[in-house]
Image 1: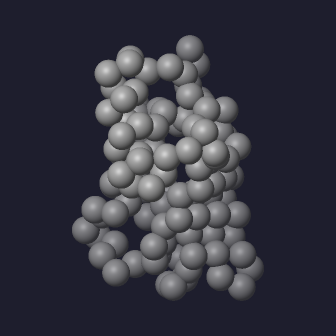
Image 2: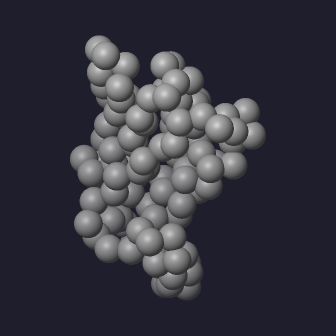
Length: 116
């Protein structure tokens, strides 16, 4: 399967928000490409509201969303920078992961309050 990722960056002209609109496939293997984009968005015009909109992605792996969120929360270089809001669709669209992994991921997303 071809897991291409596309990101459209919307910047409010008044500097109030930056929105990263993700389309395509977000997987554990490619989620790391969003990290520098999020980092850059958070430092543009502090305090700016940054959101990563995953509602238009065709394929989301719950583990990729969790890994991206963890990386954003634990980026030492951005301690005290603007928070990031991750917008996920109700009921993550995803290819079926292995059953044991799916159960762990669903449980972890529930703990984080991201469960559908």
